[in-house]
Length: 479
Image (cartoon, rainbow, N blue to C red; front, side, top):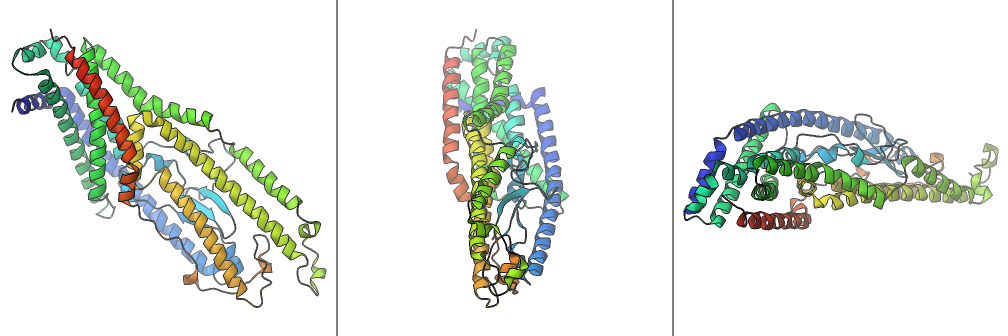
C-alpha cells in the first residue's frame, strides 16, 4: 500500500511538470509525422513493387518463347515493403531493394529509384551500412527520442528532491529507501510505457486513416514483442538516470552526466564499433574487387586450351557444327563459376563486416534494440542476407531447368553456356513451368528465438545499472 501511494505521488508530480508536457506533445507529434511518412513510403514502395513484378512477369512470358532468350534474361528479385517497416526501417534504407541475376550470373543489386547499380559498383560507398538515411520508425523514436526524454525526466529524481529538501522529509517518515527507490522506478516506467503505447496507437490510426485502410500494420504479436523489448530498454535508461541522480550532488551535474552518457551510448559507440569492424575485418574496395574478379576469371580463360579460346570461322561450321565448342563451353562455365563464387564471397565478406560491427556495437543498448526490432519487423540486414541466398538458390534451379529443357530438344547442339545462346535450344517453354522465387513470410517465432541472446544482454545491462543505482542511493546523503 505504501509503495502504491508513493508511485501515485511520483506519477502525479511528473504529470504536472512542464518537462512531461513537452515530452507528451513532442512524442505524439513525432508518432503522427512518422505515420504520415510511413504511408507515403508505403504507397511509393507498394506501387513500385507491383510495377516491377508485372513488368518482370511480362518479360518472362515474352522470353519464354525461346529457351536461350529466357536463360539470358536479366531478372531481379524485388524486396517488397513489409508491414513491419513501421517498426524498423533505418537499416533497410541502406540496403538495395533489387537483386539482379540470370540463369548463369548473379551478383548485381540496386535500387528501384535507379534500376541500375552493381553490388560492387565503382564507388567509395561499396558497403551498404555507409548509406543509411534516418527514418522516424518506432526503433528510432524509442531508441533515440524517448531515451533522451527519460534522462531529462529522471536526472533530478533524487538530487532535485535533495536540493528542494523534500527527500530528507520523505526519509524522516517510516518509508524505507527500497520502497522509495522502487516507487520512483515503477512510476517512471509506467509513464514512459504509457506514452509509448499512446504514440503507437496514434501512429497506427494515422497509418490506417491516411492510407484509406490500405497500408498493412504489424501484427499484435509483433507489437507485443516490441513492447516487451522496449520496456526493458526504457528500464535501462530509467535506472541510468536514477543512478546519476543518486551520485550527483546537484541536478545540473546529474543532467550533464546523463546526457553525455546518452550521446556515447546512442551515437558514439555504434559508429565507433562500425569503424572498428572495418579495421578488424577489412574487405577489398569495389575497385579492387572488380580487378581481382576480372583477373581471376581472365586467368581461367587464358589457361584454357588454345582451341577453346577460338570460336572458329563460320566456314568451319560445315561438317561438324561449332568446332571445339565442348572445350570452349567448359572454359566459359569455369569462368562463370569463378565470377559467381567471387561475387558470393564478396557479398559474404561485406555481410560479415557489417555483422561484426553490429555485434561489437551491442555494448550499446541502442544497437541491441535496433537489432531486435529488425528481426521482429522482418527486414534489415539479416532479411537481405536471406533474400540474397534465395536468389543464389533460384539461379541454380533456373539453370537446371534450362539444361533439362535443352536436353529434350533434338534440334539443340546442347552447349548451354552464358556466351553463345545460339549453341543451345531456342524452343519455347510454358511460362508457368519456369521456376519462380516464392515469397518468404517472416516467421515471428524464429525472430523471437534469435533475439533471446540480445534480450539477455539487455537484461544484464539493466542489472548492472540497477546495482549502481541502488548502491548509490543507499549511500546517498539526503541531508
